[in-house]
Length: 124
Image (cartoon, rainbow, N blue to C red; front, top):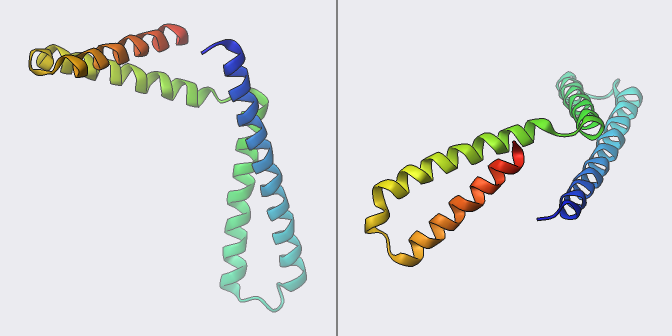
């Protein structure tokens, strides 16, 4: 996977995030308008539910703004930890079971381990 591929993926992810951000802002605006216009005829439970939704949406909006502006480092770190964990687990599995595995399965597992090692090297 080259740098161009990674940039394309990031561009697609950010476009999707921007679309989601616009959608959340529009929903928030519609709900605010609805609360202003119809709060006198809505039940207290409905109003409370709408306010909770608004708070969740505002949190999601802030989170998306931060990810778009500063990148998604949390996902990168999480992926690194998961890859390390899978590498260690699979390494132990191969050491204990390589002699009982058929050749094709063993070769596939070794190839996956090599790929995980490459991923770990790219992260560091």
